[in-house]
Amino acid sequence: MHRGKGMKFVGDSRIKAENKMPNVPKDYSEYPGKTEAFWPNFLLKEWMVGAVFLVGYLILTVAHPSPLERQADPTDTTYVPLPDWYFLSMYQLLKYEFASGPFNIVGALVMPGIAIGALMLVPFMDTTKERRPFKRPLPTAFMLLAFAAMFYLTWESVANHDWEKAKAQGEIREEVSFDPESEGYKIYAGASCIGCHGDAFEGGLGMPLADTGLTAEEITEIAKNGRGEMPGGTFKGTEEELHTLSEFISGLSTE
View 1 (tube, helix red, strand yellow):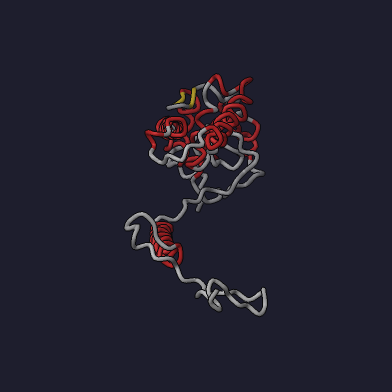
View 2 (cartoon, one colour):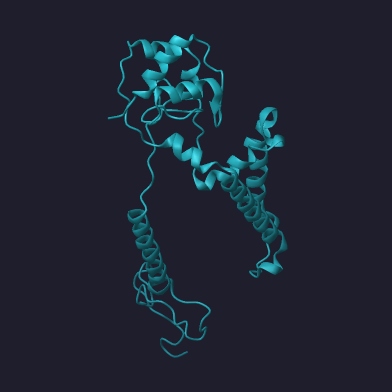
């Protein structure tokens, strides 16, 4: 046996026999287009793509800032809140008879729970190493079904929502200047008007009453015969009280 052949002499077992250079990626040239080093090749590409999306998102937020509505009023029962776009599908689901009213628990917990649970179980039900979608029918079907349901419900929610009414109910308005001790406001507060037009004339089920541009005679005519969604004959007071109320409303202004 020749000296040193097949043998390596190490003075300390904690010292490596071969000193390889650390952090040097392997040579992947024999696998062109199939794989690459995580650092720096793959990670650099991920950072570049992420930076492009981040800059684009920042540009959109500057060009189209989030719309603001008037200050929230917990006493306003006429306000219909609309969730953000990613919850619109759930919002639409709760409008159907089988998922609302006495069955609200079905739309709020049961159906979403089943959907999320099914998606979480897909990796355990399909353990194949195949990556092509048509070779993995179970997860592909679940994902297509989930996407189709979310797309359809979101579309229905947007199509059926009254955007003009939503814009009016959330519009920022200047405060109306009025004398709460005036006879006109006392009649207004004691009549059924306040339930639809708000205690500060901001509107709700009915239209806002400040800066209407209507004369007292026109307001009296509307109170008697109605106009649009407002029915006639809702005021139950005397003619004198109606005249006082009409004069009061015609003088309401935000200036």
